[in-house]
Image 1: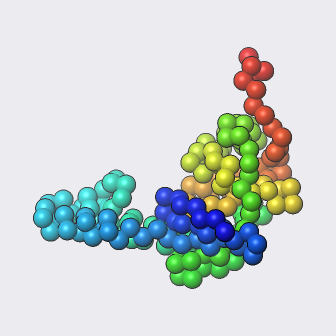
Image 2: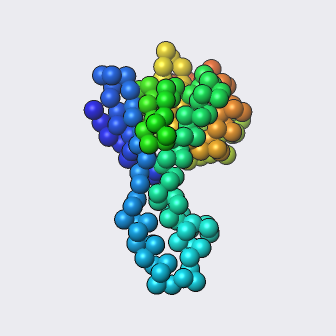
Image 3: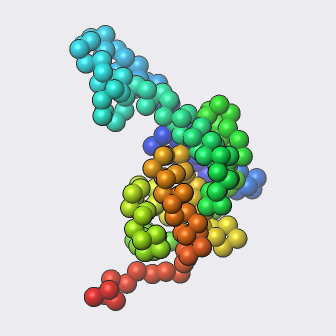
Length: 180
């Protein structure tokens, strides 16, 4: 068993059971701290409620991980896309049950450049997810994505996911000097 912490979720990896459990990270203490600040300075309520661009608004602290779980489950069940690691079910966004996939062990720069070249740079629309090899696994020799809750990620998947899956080369090594 392994536990991985992401920005909005905690993932419990159970390779022996071929499962990954995804739980939302609920930052209750931070939300309460900001709620307290609202009462001190009501003129700043929009900032604390997340109505502005502030990264950790109260809504984000409490609900982003739940929404991510639900979005991931909905997207998989809606599309059944072959590039997605299957999300079997979600318990109201409080826990997602996904098939376990051994994260890709590929050097980051080579992985990223390989995906850019395959997709004609479409993956740059979501560099956060597509740059990190640990967000992917190989299943039966085919690349699959493990984390696909964000709308931007889903758009890239619909556009180039099958192309990435078909053309990914696990042996690709970026050699900068050969590009000159």
